[in-house]
Image (cartoon, rainbow, N blue to C red; front, side, top):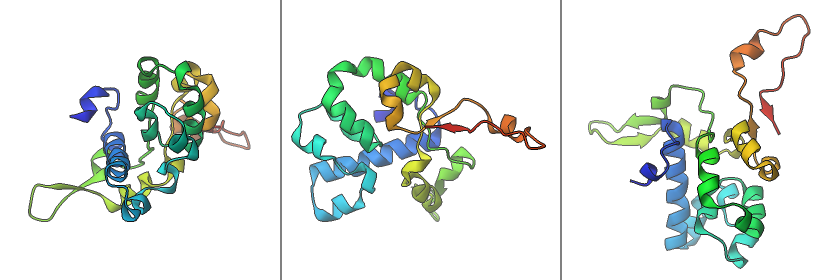
Length: 171
């Protein structure tokens, strides 16, 4: 089980999204056909830096192209054992529905399939984010991803009478 290596990815939507993206990338790497390449979201296609510069394989599975570009040239500064906890513990696809709604039961069988609404959601890079703990651990990488603040949306809703609520998403 791949996810047992990343216990901090504990929410179902993130587990499904990470496994699905890994599946798409691996399928293209193992069988590099035009069809498999075209099934990758544009932002998961390999960057020129990935194609021409040797780098650790784990970098190929990060969703943000700018992050991959930056890491390919400086991966020596980011040991995987120091990287993965701030990354996996704050990774979010910001699914706004019940976590179990990312999957559906397939007709009469007990097989689960990815909800088409969730698939569209996870295929949009703007729905992926990391948290402030990642930005604190790796400040040089914060500008390459969407950083979502720790502030709950319910606090933002309390601002009234012209006062501005702080933005929930810092860039």
